[in-house]
Length: 458
Image (cartoon, rainbow, N blue to C red; front, side, top):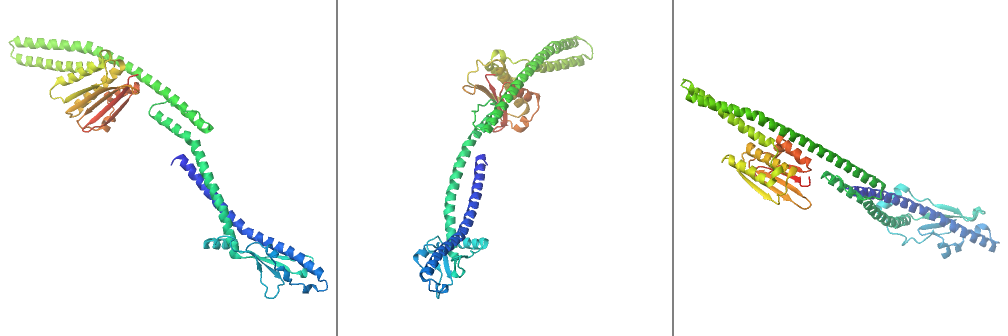
């Protein structure tokens, strides 16, 4: 999951928990507010009746105090206005057939669901009545008892919860939306860092990253830039070392080619001359074993010819290809013609040249020639191919590279070829890597396909 989505999901969980906590708090506060309204109603009514009590006492001084109660005038609209909605007030001592005076309970809230009423009643319990004396100076003046209506109290609590939760829900949604936008904006540079790392994985070791405002992202961007610089420096050093090793190997190949030519070539030529002399002398002698001598001489001559042919092939492979001096196109044509002319049993080799190859010389030409030579050799010697396609393409523009593609129809396993540790394949890999190119080996339609990309700027 993306980091932005993870943070938004965690923020959503936090907002949900806060909303749940706010719901619980609003429920408790709404339920307790009924107790506060009950106490306030009892207090207001007791104060009002206390003033009424003392007024009646002074106006009717001839009566006994016990004859003043109950006071008929206490059930007035003024008294009703002192009672909170859903609260019932009773005067003690009460008159005959006198019921409690209740505040208006209709329209104070929606009917709550059953589960809410059951949960509130179970967890918070019922409301206790509140009793206040009418007068603290006269104990026999009576008392005021205020009791909340249970159904009205639950409805009032539910309405209070709805009012608070709707506001809290709107605030939570607004906070979640704004925080998500802020998180997405803050983490937007992370995509640029990921893109830079992907470019580094493809070989672009010095990606350009902007300066980030966040200190943490700026530190990450700086670390990525430093890592890219170190990787680029390491790859440059590796490429230089590989080129130096290839130069040393080329020098050794040239030295070995000279020694083979000078030592083995001359000695084999001498052996061949001696064999011809023996064969000629055996033909002229009258000795009874002259046939055997001539046959031995011919066998020596044939073995010498085979060794010299192998030596010439090894010298051709050891010497620098003529592509470095003569150009790539002419050398590739000569290479294909030489393979075609060796025997009619060879498969058909198709050469496809695209682009201007006239000015491709030097190390790039030599590397391309070696790749083509090694791939043709492997296809001809290690497969039963009937057709081999050698395609050389020069790509201009931003690529500016030379593509060498060899494909045969001789079956074969690309994975096994790619895992081969032979000197030929290892050598062309090293050459291509030293020039900053790439080599890929894959299965073709009926065989194996080898593609090498060599930068022309190498």
